[in-house]
Length: 576
Image (cartoon, rainbow, N blue to C red; front, side, top):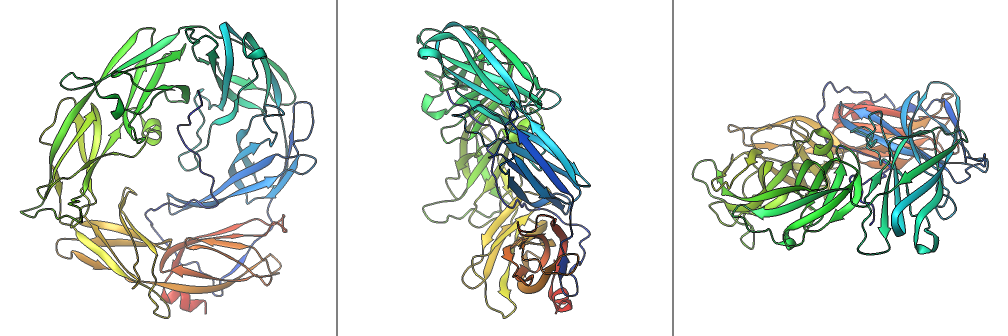
């Protein structure tokens, strides 16, 4: 059974999100020069357990800066090791999240990765050498395959996902060691891990379909690194704990299997185990091995999260998840009715599950919310949801903004769950460059005080955009620039926000004012400085960020940020 990751990992050059802004300053320089100064150099040496250099190792540092409190911008800096297993890079002083990959093919050796942090204020040298774990795994019955998933853990022994701002993939190694003859009760193999704390989840596939071998999770493995030898002995067992889930509608009938997707078990607050399945006749039974506290996550056929519930597994643990009918009307204020937009599309109701299991699961157990179509102008809607807490929201309404979220706790059928929609207002405007040319295809989004996106649009061929919003005060992102305190109210239901894209020319230099031909990243994209260090970027009116990076041919230079850069007609005038 293949390992399923709970949190997909995306590697990107830039990471940006929408947010609020306070205390912005104008820090454009009179000629927008930017000096990229020399920086401390980290020299990292990567070695195998036997001392051999990791010639294909790669070091990736998540160099993020905080823009305005919670908006994160930055870049992932990756450096490959040389023939001696050495990677060197210049960094601004500070502490950076770091990932080391060995670059060793798994067909050659099972060498894991490492997530670490690098604090630097002066030139520094570090050596990362693995230790070797010699595994002996025994089984009470003959097996034909093993899957070993090794993941890094934090101080509490749970999977280390990093911070909210810089989520990490805790898995450092996934291996399928060879089983002698494809039929054995004892399997031996070796892995190598950098110094750190890890756990391993081992799943065996028995030769006989009638046999059962329970999944096994090790205690914390504290790998010493530094070339140490570390024997690891694991004894698998048959049977083990089970979680048997029954799916039933409120009337008692079994939920059709086709309406349930995959059910998976997770360590309570930790990693996805390689045990998952689908219901048969409304029942799914999953083996959790010797692991007791688990969270069972039920997904719909399209991957949406239907339920997430904690259980203390036992050999005979049984639970029933009951699905209730919830229905009502989406009601505009007053006597207004909804209008359709083609094919009687009146909009829909999203029902996003609230796990109640804490921030870890709220952040990680997410899928597409359950959607119920609104069927008529009276706003009629109906859905079937498993018992629990939900946030209901009317969205994609043709003539109205989305509703405010409505909290609903389901423990019985709820046939009168209405959702009120205020008429709200519209934020609209025109996007142009300095020559008054209309700008099409520019992304515009409206964000509320909780950093949730209320609505978005793309400027049309005439540069116009329009976004319906509830009454309130918002922030608008256009082309990567932020405009604050944009409000609509019952007395001013339409707010016009016209924005100009300005052309800014500058020069990037080193400390001696020599030219630096690097790359400049900003909210609207990136540009490359010439060999003279000069560059031109097109930034939208509003609060911007700019990241200056030197070329790889200047390894002693760091990078530099400008945050809270206010761009408007006055500031652009000041640099010309």
